[in-house]
Length: 63
Image (spheres, rainbow, N blue to C red):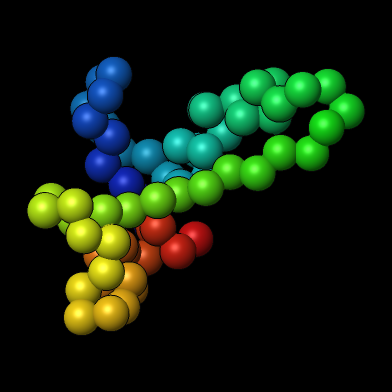
């Protein structure tokens, strides 16, 4: 699956590459576990559509 990158340079990337470029492990305190969340909201600020969240995200959000 390819993702469209908009910033800093437009192009395509993969979910794994996009995540690895964030270098999340180096942001965590040494020797401490860390947690990463992906939160999605609709344009009007809702977090669910008819009580379900699946419709707000895509396949890349679930990987």
